[in-house]
Amino acid sequence: MAVQYDLEGQKRAYAKWAPIYDKVYVKLLADAQRKAATTAAACGPNILEVGVGTGLVLPYYPKGAHVTGIDLSADMLRKAVEKKVGRNLTQVGLLAAMDACNLGFADQTFDAVTVPFVITLVPDPEGALDEMYRVLKPGGEIVVASKLGADDGPVAQIEQALAPLVKKVGWSIAFKASRLRNWAAKYPDMDVVEISPVFPVGFFKLVRIKKQA
Image 1: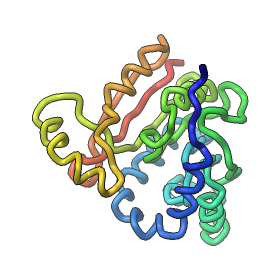
Image 2 (image 1 turned 180 degrees about the horizontal axis):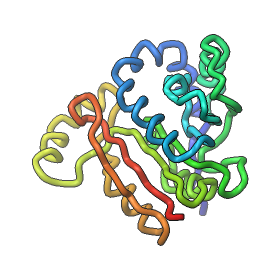
Image 3 (image 1 turned 90 degrees about the vertical axis):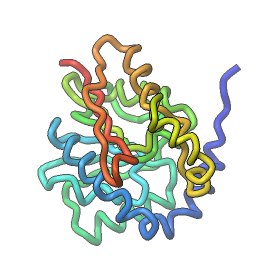
Image 4 (image 1 turned 30 degrees about the vertical axis):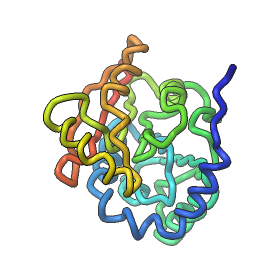
């Protein structure tokens, strides 16, 4: 039996977040968002951003890029469109409502896929990553910015102790970096080439998963 995901429930939750999302996260996520955009742009001009949300990452892409953004929430996308128009973000093209697990693009369309702070929220992360792999050109990268729990060691123990507090502010330690490695291992041409800490104090991680040319 196929697993059923509450996408409509997610849309309702995002609709409530849309008016205040920028005020809550604009400074906290800025370092990771800037680095994710820069890393993706280094792969080539044609970039897909999965989970574009209110468009916080869009201004960080260079003017020579051509960015397509998708999100499940129409309410979030309206905010992204406002940024595109209001800030004259000429590097931003199509902004569309779309399920990350069912991307409406041809195979090998994009030089890079950016996934800023959404992979832990997708009901089927591996299914979404499969779709990103499909639309990614050889030589391109999937660039994930996210809160990722440590797999083991002292950091994992500290995170476990702080888990109840972290949960109250909407984060989770359940999604480990090893989950991305395990997914990439399914494909002989995919490699996790870097996992690097970003502000604040490495609480967030930037992950580069490269598709071999």
